[in-house]
Image (cartoon, rainbow, N blue to C red; front, side, top):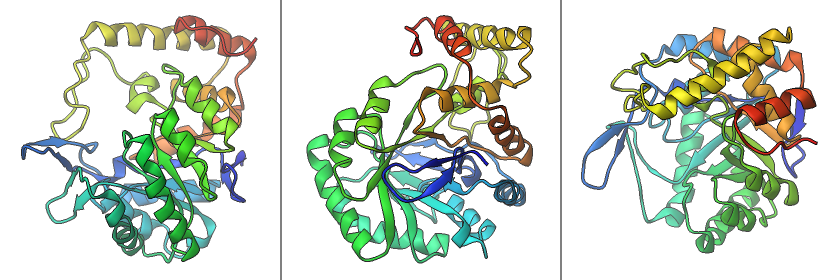
Length: 331
């Protein structure tokens, strides 16, 4: 199994983890005005989710990333069921920073983040049925950089108490990430990065501060898999339902994805489009750990097989940069 070190920690993890947002099932984001917006991935089969997690475990995947908000606790509960009896074999990551109403199945913003951290941690420990969390991540992306030291200090106390082992922040804010990374037990920054959207500044922050780059949305919420087209419509309870796939932006996106596919196919490389996208992330930096989402065993199987093909060549990386009209990152 292809492995990587988790930042400055002593933890070794599979180079790919599983992102557990989708298996949380439907849930809503509650806006300040009382309106609701879907923030899940539609209906989910819990039994299939557990089968997929077991398949991943048996294949050597040991990093599982969830959050309190995913299904308003449902993802954490399903993960705890799937990991029963195997807790000591995995690196368990979850997130905090929002109000979660398990009964109403809603998530919402709060201004009282720091006073709530300890209780949020206890709630996640309860749902996950564990005594400790390996990686506890701040989930509020846009929190002001000048205030994150307070959050970091609470997390250091939770480390001292044995509630968590390490912590990180899910953000695309380089300035805030630099501050957070100064914490003794900060070991990971979770951020956006994929074949279609490079994030060189975030990668540089992780490199300079010895942080793992845990990559959310490595497949662009599914659009880099080649499975969508201009006729794709998502269910009303899927957060992607507002996407208009006939829009010009999407047309250009589809054309680039197809150009990448054809380039690999013409050269005899058998990787699927999802496997190309994952390999691009591994090749981009030796700190990256993508966490693609899943709902089925088939999806997990395809993504794990990407690890067997290894990294991309310089020629392949530069061709992808050319297709996406950006400066090459490999000379």
